[in-house]
Length: 384
Image (cartoon, rainbow, N blue to C red; front, side, top):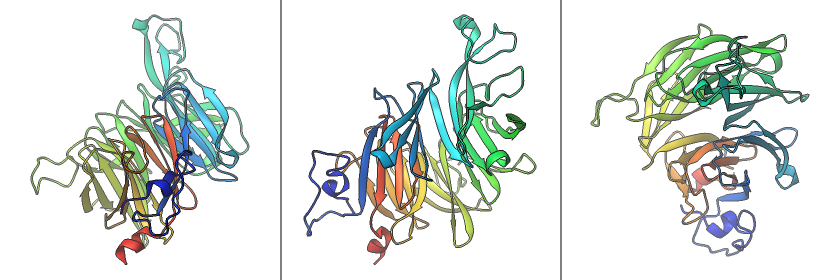
């Protein structure tokens, strides 16, 4: 199906485009874009978006212009907060009553404690490190920094790439990864976040994390997927990269693995992986490959949600700016959002996140957040 451009964005995301009122329209009235949100004063990349759904929807955006921002969806998506950190903000995550912000900072080796944020050294003695701040949301409070150690006041030796969390309040457990290939498990005690364990195994940037069935899944530009026993802090399984281009060469990806998405169907846990090799793959809880499908271009981000018929779908953000929507678990192609024909992004789609009421949010290299809603039983229309 090809979505109707006028129905999708007319009068909302594209104010000068009239909404479609043709009852006999040849294109599908299945998805709406409610807002096109410019997240920065310039078209700088927005690598991550997340939302807080209760008590009202607030949108959090990370930007490479050195700031993270909050937008109020109930007030015409007005910007209600902006915090400048001075360097690239790479990720934002809301979970368990916390906002976690991962950003670049400066490590000044001329300082006695190697403190991040120093400006006294020269270029030869200052290095980019990864920093995380955790902000309590209910009630709101000041940010609490993540430090590897008292004499190492940063969260990663290189940029933070991914953050996931489980639990709430002071029972929240955070896993954060970076470009150094390391993962760290963080817990809070006595008002301070500290590193409880280190997850070593990947040899390049860790690009995605997912929690499924009590296990942590991680993926990397080293083309591998690793599964971790969180209780032991050990890697329990490795899905290795495929060894060749032909059949029977292994189940893994043939290129950097960029994203992971966990979902549950009929009581069973599954994880979907996406790669720059252009494929998405479904794995069951035992890391057995269930399905593979090619997207025709590199996969950068994913989120699972339901259409109005309670059918599970996978929204896939692609390297050339397209957004593909597929049925789960069949991988049947439902429709594609393309800026050339309907509406979409002008650059790589770096982040897709699920919202309430069949909504999803996308953002990417163009610095734009698009707010979408599925408004039909799409899978049912095709299957019927």
